[in-house]
Length: 300
Image 1 (cartoon, helix red, strand yellow):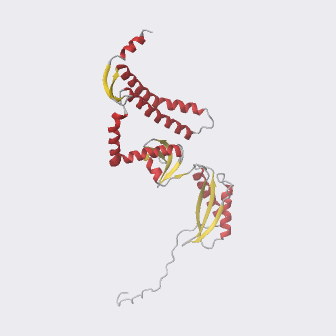
Image 2 (cartoon, rainbow, N blue to C red):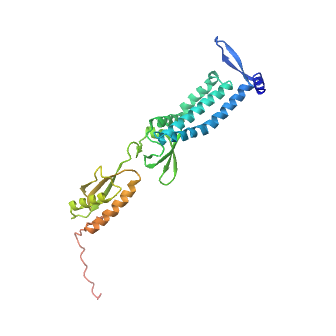
């Protein structure tokens, strides 16, 4: 109990004063005491510690709930971190005597900055909030943006980190996902279609070719029975009869396995039944042969 009087004594030492508006509308000067300054420092320190540790504790507690997936946990912890940082900073600054009347010049400078050079930063920040709420993709999803594909590892306020298939981390501004074209390979359904294009030599029986392609699809364990695999004779190519085999797989990880297995089995079946895979050919027609000059005298 002897500590309380000492703490109360700290409230008697005014470090500086700030201007404020009283209840009657008249300007007044209010002191910032040593106790308020210490509480402000304590609030800012708690804000830093809480923003680093509290979201992780919340995520661990959410792991025990079966209905909360990884993407939802990430969204909740991210929003909690932003709330702690913004709320703790406002409380700490208010204890130091910072009021909105003193921060108006900062808001004006921020507005001018947005007009000249900070609009991209602000746009990326707003886009990051939209991504967390709208969730066009989640952490762990495989997406394609332009000619780049990879797995989402982090969604931050300014940018999103994608780990591509070469194990390189690519940091992309959030505005890119809002204003550009985005392909999510597993947002609501992980089933995707695989198309194999095969060209066989002219003179090959098309019915036999389609039968062999469907047989290869039926034997592959990665190919789904529903939707049913299909095979089509599409066109007469320059050097081949062009076919397509269209199958569905249950997940993105099965695409390469299915392509490898189907190509191997198709090659075996074609070899067993004498179906030749076409290759580019060219017919050369010679219209005029140069006349052979007579041998010169004495040349023999």
